Image 1 (cartoon, rainbow, N blue to C red):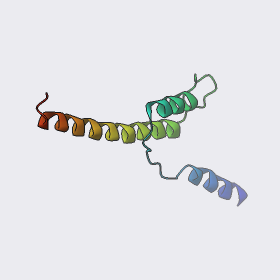
Image 2: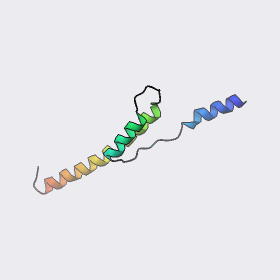
Image 3: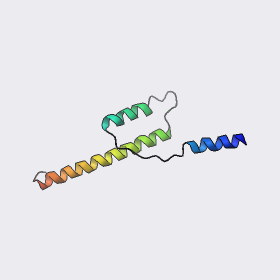
Image 4: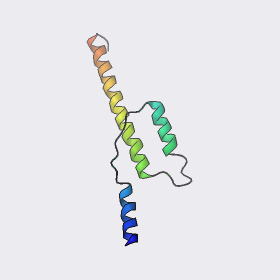
Length: 80
């Protein structure tokens, strides 16, 4: 009984939903260096990779929106 309960707790512990957060370049670099050290101890996990990737996507989407807005503004003002 205790083994089944322990196994259930282990399997559901990492089942939390992950979301990406917009981060600056400095924050992303810190996150990458923290979660992806040289993998000599085996601590790089799929969960860490997913989190960093989601944060990069969220940050890139924000950058792309700003760049698109700036490009449109520049075009409307007669620039390239």
